[in-house]
Length: 538
View 1: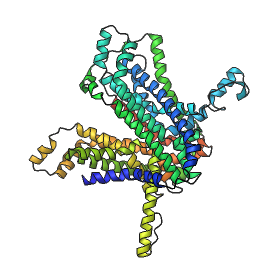
View 2 (view 1 turned 60 degrees about the horizontal axis):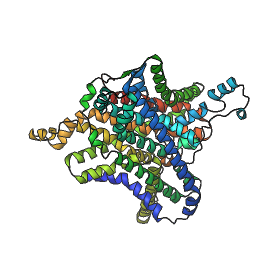
View 3 (view 1 turned 180 degrees about the vertical axis):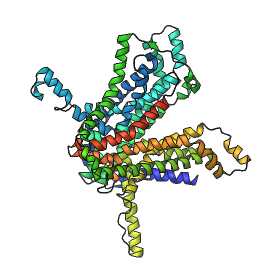
View 4 (view 1 turned 90 degrees about the horizontal axis):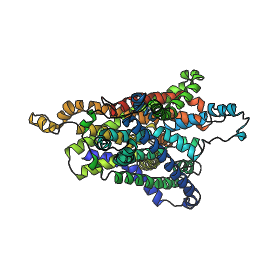
């Protein structure tokens, strides 16, 4: 129980520090923030969240229903390809779509050629650098969260009742609207909460597209105004939004237990509506478009730029960023697995509310945007370094300076705290699949708890541990917001290298590094999507 408590304290302490700084500060900047920053940033953030939610829900739910309930060309292939946009970080999607839809891009060039226009004043074209444009970009790569959660529910929970409704003569659209949607509501909201948390976490996309959200305001207040206290206060406002999202998700799940079904029903063949040629092609196109927008176009744009910059493959800066990314990602994956095993062991051997509360608080980091976690950790480490330096100077005359602030270890700390929930979820799922009498049987045979864990439990949990490590590795490779705040001076990961190039208006110079990020993410995403959708008859 003590190790689990230590893990929980390490995760929660940055958030407590952030809150204390925001509350106990002088408040000198609060009047300016309350009058000039927070109102506009909050309205913009809420508008962005609303539009992203609507677009992601529409795309995710519709495509999940199409591939689950209808038979059309390329259905099996599209059922897993619809998850590919998860391999594209939102900031890469923003850079690529910004270039693709630019005045000199292929779309506007085609519009001018077809219409005979000479300049942008001669025709109207949607502005990608706007709040609706940012919502379009973010939803194009985040909708798979809704697609995955919704389709799994359609596969496992909606079969019997949908079959009964069709037997009674209900048309497919009525079955979808009156039966499948209500059953899938908790899963849809759970997926949307993940989408909205990722939207709140984003900094690269909104900054590039010129959208002043609360996340952007945190960076602007700290870097431009030099007010860490003001940044902490804005971060606390974001924390309120996050807590509201978590409450909504828990509220939506309050009656989910009434809709549970046995997983063995996934073995049954799903009765799908076979569509005639034209209708089938329409559904194929409807499922292809999200893949094109969220995955193919970004990869195509980045690959086009990278093809003209192959000389960067010999650039030491690129390989230094790659090495830094791999080091941080591997260290984070290793630490999250170790800490997740500690939490799982505490929960397994201490059946009670205390263990459950500790575990719940320990995984709260995933619900927090990297901006909030990064600011809190930055303040905490800076204060710890100052206290340590003062003590050592007074006692031994040694001035240590900043030992932990602005180090790669701080980046690993933030990523570990944020992605611990991912590893914990995977390992807990693996434990739940094991027979409950393994531990008593091992004790009867004379094995201690440590021997049981080392020789029995860990080998059985190997698939879950590998899955957790891969997912955390990919998430860390893509992470940007906390890394920007906490990294040492001159220390670049692949994500920050791409971000720096985009910040100075040279997206194309970061294309090779961007493709490295996509390559690191795409194969695990494919394996994950195919594993989640594994079914003989899908």
